[in-house]
Length: 117
Length: 115
Image (tube, rainbow over all chains, first blue to last red; front, side, top):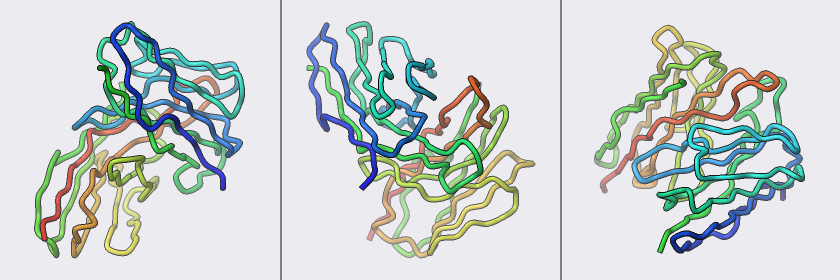
């Protein structure tokens, strides 16, 4: 089955540590996204990538970094510069940029819950 | 900056009631509005709306877009406890090479259905 796999499901980070969240898709989608969700909040866009070796900052990119070396993979690193990293992180991908289809082909992963200890 | 506002932020009703959730938006280069249901994990897609005045229906759920008023509503009739969730509204921009991308979400409506 095609889909997006995020790992790990739960992650604990110590103060001052960098951690990397994995996102892998086998949908052959060009565009991939990282969102952050805090309690009582909607999803906020951190970074996105429309093509391999290219990515753009979203609304809340400070303290995060990404790479897109392969089409299938879009890992997110939460750096020590991110002062409040405890949140639920969702990865998504989109494959259709042409004709309108249901949902525009957006697919979400099951998320990683990051907690600072 | 694109903006999506949902109301109410939380709602508690009894099973069998009908609820209406609201979403208003300000977005440049609007392409579509999407509704999602989220139960603790990834959002589940409900509807995508692009044309004003055309109702989308799926069972007890329905939604309609008003482009003149820059808003949308999501209706749930004969609510059940399984409808308890966060309902998210998002808008999608027109995509152009190198332009803005990604969905802009509202904060969501936390719906609780009591037995």
